Length: 227
Ligand code: CTP
Ligand code: CA
Image (cartoon, rainbow, N blue to C red; front, side):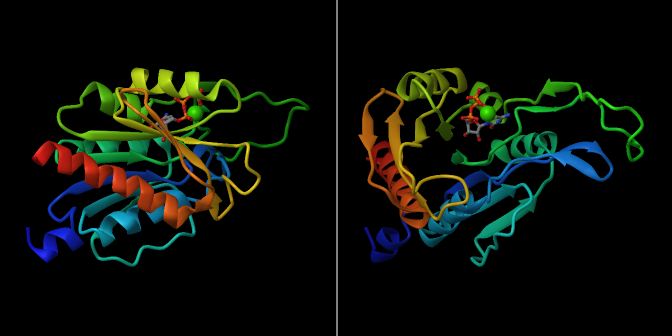
């Protein structure tokens, strides 16, 4: 193999990455969102592009920026929009990494006009969003599917259930035990759980380094299937 292949082991591969929060409209000026910064997904996109992959980065609202021309950013707002874009590109991609903090529920109806403060109490009926990753898992052919999981109890059991429910090849479990890890932080502590349920606990490290670890898993996957 040439040096170029070793430096750019993912040249020719297409990777779909979801990132950031989703915003679910209540009315034209209000939404239900979450505190995801998008950083983990954007760092994964940068690591993938550095290894030569073509990246489609579908992201909810974030301040993160892309610099590598191998990354095509597709901004979306809502979970429904993220779902549609993911399915539009899915057939063509080799890998999916779902790092987005997708809203689990959205308002049943978004009001057409700004809601006025008339009554003392106000209830918004919420309905489930589509599970994007599970829907991709159902349609899986050769794609290598990676999900994230954030759990506060029974973390291994719950993460393994997500592998099965979403037909994943790898899940990245965010460990909340560590104060330096997670939402709004620049560091993360993760545990990899493979589809055979083998477990690899990683050290607390920068999100850039966690991104590189995830890309290493992808590179070794392709080494195994090509040899
Ligand atoms: N996910 C998704 N679409 C959704 C919800 C989640 O694609 N509507 C993806 C996330 O991007 C993540 C994985 O599914 O990669 C797990 O998300 P998580 O919130 O941990 O799990 P849920 O399946 O939503 O279950 P719960 O929140 O009840 O733990
Ligand atoms: Ca969820």
